[in-house]
Length: 534
Image 1: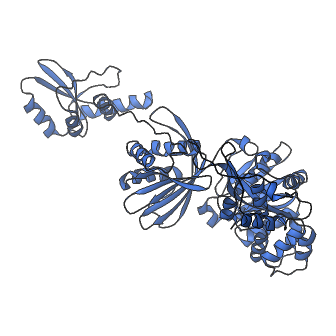
Image 2 (image 1 turned 135 degrees about the vertical axis):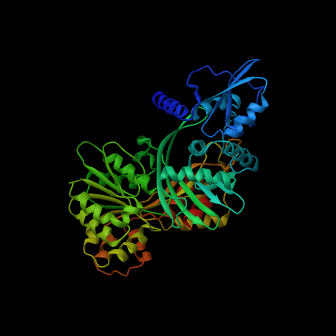
Image 3 (image 1 turned 180 degrees about the horizontal axis):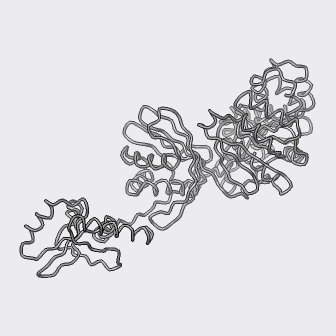
């Protein structure tokens, strides 16, 4: 509490004392003697009374607004041999005294390591830690540990008897703690208040938290989360997506693009116009890819505007417009996009193309000299085109506007320090060879699989799982060659398979092919590729 606020509190207490015809005691000073032999700590809590001074003949008690007359009378009966006085003290002063009589227990925050994540012993320790700290510290501690483990999400899942807390690390969920329903209500209320959502809503909700929290141990944690909540039969479940606000993290050099993929992206950046779509499921790194492109395009000569629901990363030099879910129902993305185009931007990013109106407006903007970047939910690059055609119907803008479609998914990367060499069996080698045989002409590929060194996950005390970080499997094509010829025929009932075949003939490498090449390069495993790609 600031000095001004404390002064106002004491002044208000003094005025109340005059009205109640009680003496007033100023407790804002630094020296506060304590007398533990008069009343127990529990009695001080229950009776809302504090001994301010005591000797062999007199005792002065401090009372608050909530101290009853019956309590003061019982105290007089208890200490009949002493001369008693009662003075009104502020609620803040009472709480300060109680911290002296009952100092808060030192909280020892259990550091979570990757080798202990998911173990029963860790779950018990972290659960005990969370049960004894305040709500803000619970959230800050979870975020702090999630960042430490490079987790992408924190999952809060209501069960019949408890609430399960899990971290998604490198795409896989690990149990971290169990919360009692009572403690979870405290935590979810604090999260909902900070994220501007309701704990009693019958609908799914979205929110965002961006703040700094000072923890009880003196540490400060930057909390930047996107919230997704949904009511279940046991209560409100929530997933909190973590964001890293370091602008240097969003760099094309960190995306792991192949030489060909990087050449295509660099060409688009050099001639910024047309529509670029990045597609994939939730959590596949679509927004990270777009922001890495934006970061490379960001310079004083260009005006860049984004329309997002919500704004996930904040960057200098970019105008960012947040369209919340509630606002999106009243003023949709297309209307915002049309308004943005009147601001004369060079580059526009639309967080997600969701409807026909937004799709058509984005296509028109791409044809009028703007570079439009957006995400789109689809399982593959070819499927993105079929879905887009379903959304916009027969539209001549379609082929001319789109420049690049990139699909991606994330797989776990082998830890280079502990990965173990091994030799796949004959069946596995045949599967790998079959995929390599379908690669487009001009793509480098291993010539002799039997002389190639393959790797599987190792294990260490620090990393028992053998994976460290994630890499993207990608497929992308430009609107050129066979695929452009196919689409210009005007057939709007093309299947994703037909489009993919045309894209492959134009030189596209599929996600499966990209994954198998990464297996051959010792970056990941066959199991990971098939787990993610199918």
